[in-house]
Image (cartoon, rainbow, N blue to C red; front, side):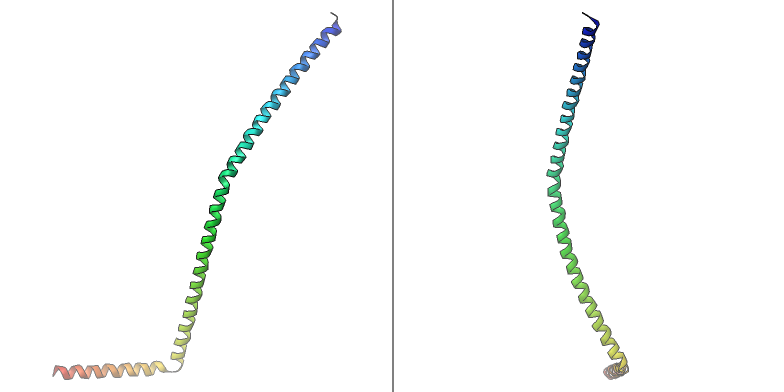
Length: 118
């Protein structure tokens, strides 16, 4: 065997070791890809129902907020009407008339009580 034959055997052996190393790396990488694919499928399977639940919760919350908004508008309307009524009563001097009527009723009741006591 000559030096060229020995060099060819060494080169072939080195090439075989490199080929085996590359094949091992490819096999390991394919396993990693399989595990990643499995993890993604698992996350997708668990996430879809969760997203559906969140969507339902948001829809129910929006309905409740619409009801609260409707109630708020009604309360605002009532407050506006009460304010207008109070302004109307106060601006027409009706308060003085009402106070006079109340004072008259109180006096009449007082006289009635004094007559019963005698």
